[in-house]
Every structure is written in C-alpha cells, then in structure tokens.
Image 1 (cartoon, rainbow, N blue to C red):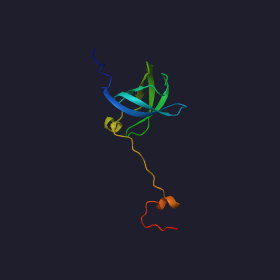
Image 2: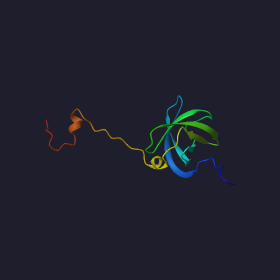
Image 3: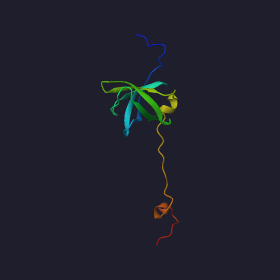
Image 4: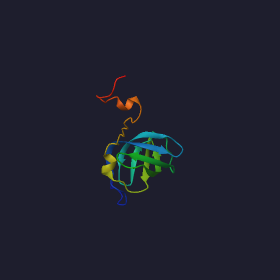
Length: 115
C-alpha cells in the first residue's frame, strides 16, 4: 500500500515531547513517528479529536497542534506550521541558573571569607 502523495514522509523516532492540552498540565509523551507537519504520540495526555494542544520537543519552541485522531492509546497531531526535524531531534536544553545573592552565591568560591 503506497502513502498518499499529499502526506509528508514519516520518520520513526524515539523522542519525548511535552504536550499540553487546553485546560490541562504539560505531560511528557513519547513521539512514535514524526514528519514536518505532524506526529503520532502515545496518548498520555488523554487527548480528544478536535482538541487543541501545545507541543514542545527538542530544541523547538512550543507550537500549536490539532488533535486529528485518537485510537488504541495513540494520538495523531497536525502542527500549525512546518517544523525543523533536526531541531526536533536535538535534546531539550536544560537551563541552569546560578545563585546570585546570599551566602549560597559564594559557596563555590575558594577565596571566600569564613566567619
């Protein structure tokens, strides 16, 4: 069976995305396949067809998506715009904020005064 020509090619992946449904909290969902226009995910967020969701994966900014279908624990999402597949596969950045005030700001300073 051939793939319809209007459908973007799918890539099998093992990624995680933070999916937030309208009125809900963000839930980490496994991405099963990915294209520039959409994704198939494990439906850990209890999505419903026709619902709107926000998806954040890899190095991409959060993006809007429509839930197209939900079946047997999976959900199909259609993104609002095309995504950069390479950026989607990059690990999410972990922002580390160094302490700036108080005694903990000098904790790693070898030349700090001892009281």
